[in-house]
Length: 298
Image (cartoon, rainbow, N blue to C red; front, side):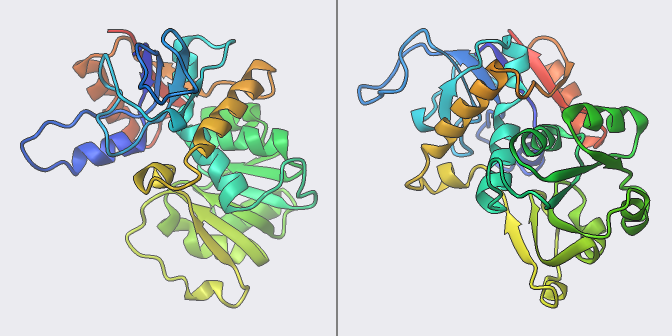
């Protein structure tokens, strides 16, 4: 293991932990292959790889880790280990949300508008890039602080609005009357009714967070569709298309190497130690992290 990153799933699994058997956390990872199983065909010892792993196995906060080859890809050649570690889990989440759940087409959807709530976070940072670089959509990102708003602009958003203010007023300020697609990445319960109001008839709403309850009945009048993205679904259920995560990470690596998109590394917290991991978890739990927090080396 060379470098790792932390994600909300790390803090959620830690907070919900019960029992006496230790649990190794961590999903984002960059490392070097040490050995492979006899049926492995995609990798060989010495390969530099990146991946986000699976919930059912010990995580990446360790010197060595076992991972299914269908979830792994060769790391981008042009990124150092820390910069690469920022991306796998959020890139998978963003890609699946945009292209698999919302059914947006690469190079397509001209005339459509995507609203990303929480665009400065880990998923938002890469989703903004993918949507602005690989589709013809108008991309609106939300962020509430000057530094996070600037981060979202640099990621490629065509417009940036403040989600701490009334959504309808903020959209009107930039001349937008409705949006066709919404990616709600944080505080969905808080924004849900406003998002329904903002969506055009037959629009699509995707989310990744964990609201306690959602009243979906108001979606009916506009025939809105609701989509959930959970990047561990394929590995949890060993779906027939598990290899899709290898394929999309390979594609993302190529997009980085040809300078279409860039790393979302926000802060480097130093070596992979218990103290630094605790610090990273605390920062993530504030909800104020911009980009991704990365740790590197032992």
